[in-house]
Length: 264
Image (cartoon, rainbow, N blue to C red):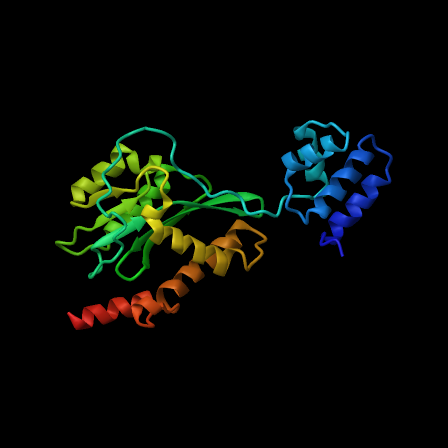
């Protein structure tokens, strides 16, 4: 079994028998791709072809792979929002102390990227570090500031009088924007940022993204972005309300939040 979709298999067989000038190249590309179980992208395949004496430009290899339906199966690199020293960075007030004894005491946020049916989808969630609950989130086809601002406004709307959390993020450009910083200042929210290039400083969000992708994204196939977004909403509902956490004494985030309110 090649693991190819039936339509892709027949397309390749037709193309390889059609006598086009790239037939030999396509056969070599297909062979290398399957020898490495789909781990090689077009750049690695270009290098492997050169080692075999077949020198093609990587743009041509990429185009031929696209026509044959061959794509690297290796997970793409994590989306990074850092774009250099633009705007102003905030101090790291959290210092990896992710424990919070009360809700709305410490928040964390980040942006992650998904590739769904050939399209990019970006997710901007807001987490309460007391119980790990996702209290607000937004998605968009681009990592635009409007997505982050809308998420922030939704989170701030949940605060009660006198609640002024620390809000921690990485040093992404969205969090350095004057409007973002001004909004936090107006609400009395303390802005905190990870040190540059240190993902461990925002480990709580990194952990959530890992769980989300392993339990939802990688276990499903999506025919469209709309299907993905519908499932995402259901998963976050499940994550907040039904998925228990050992560190919350076997309760879900919402159950633990309710427990705290009854105990106070």
